[in-house]
Each structure stands twice: as C-alpha cells, then as structure tokens.
Amino acid sequence: MNITETTLLKSYVDTEEFPLVICGMDYRIKYMNNLALEQYEKYGGTKLLGRLLTSLMDEEAKSKVDMVIEWFKEDISHNRMLAVRDNSEKTDIYMCALRDETGGLIGFCSRHRSRRSDDGTPYSTID
Image 1 (tube, rainbow, N blue to C red):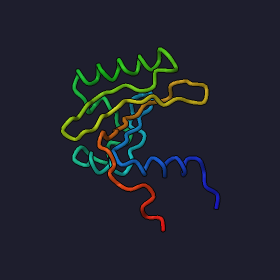
Image 2: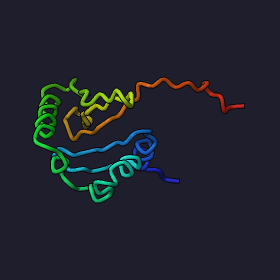
Image 3: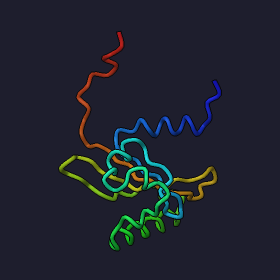
C-alpha cells in the first residue's frame, strides 16, 4: 500500500475532536475536518470550501484576523494566538500559523482546545 503524506496528514487532522478549519494566505477556506463540516453545516458546510473566510465575518472579526496574520508575519516564533475563550464549554480557540519548511507563512487555521480534564484510565482498553 502506497500511503502519501497528504493521506496521512488528512487522516490525522480528521482525528481532531474539535472543528478544524484551514485557510491559505488568500483567506480562502482550503480544508475543513469532518467535525467542522458538521458544525458549520448551517452556514453551508462543504459549500464553504473555497470561500473567503472574511465573507463570513463582521468588520471587527476581519480586523482581528488581519492583525493576527500580520503578527504571524513579524517573527517565525509567532505561531499561536488565543482568539476566543469559551468558558461555558471550557474550550479555547486559537489561531495558528501554518509554515513551510523554511518557516514562511503559508496559511493559518483555527485550533480548539478543551480545558476539561480526561477522567479516563490510561490504556484501559488494553488487556
């Protein structure tokens, strides 16, 4: 079986337990994992692919995204910025820089992270 890097990366991204939206530097939505497609179905789901992210935002949100992108461009170490803290869901949403092998900015994504602790027992399903 010949598995490409693209297949591996797509498979990994689809394991995310939160919506993940990836945009290019032109602000076009390039990829949405399955949870993002489901969560954003009311806004068009798969029809959002290829659309400008900014077409879905108000002016204040557009301005904030522009500022974060400029911050990402300033320094290769600028890679993650807290965008939204949802205390009711105990979730934080970050904007993250996507960079090529030389550190050049090639896009950005949203990344949700839960602040809830996992109460499961490690490796509990292994006999």
